Length: 105
Image 1: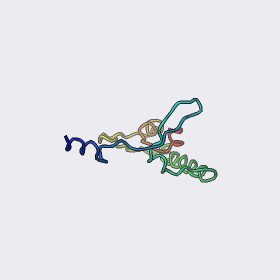
Image 2: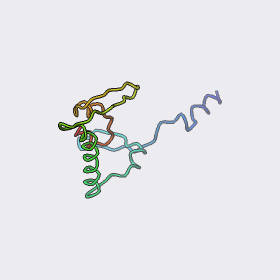
Image 3: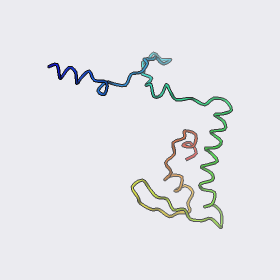
Image 4: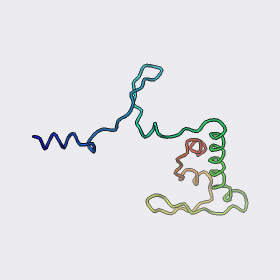
């Protein structure tokens, strides 16, 4: 029995510790430590980050537009290859992590 108690009390088996908070409607939620450590951009830094994300998305499809548009080779996560010059298809296949860039896609 002691072995079981020691195994269950090990830190590796413990749940992640966070803070309990309440939203404006009274619903409780937990703020996980990982999220609390993330720095949130504010003001002009947030604007700059959003503009850079939008420019990166636009730059990725810019060369496929127009009468001299070039084809793009898109390789999926499972290794399948797609060759297209359709901007909508290129944007659809993108895996974007930036929240504002996701709005553009």
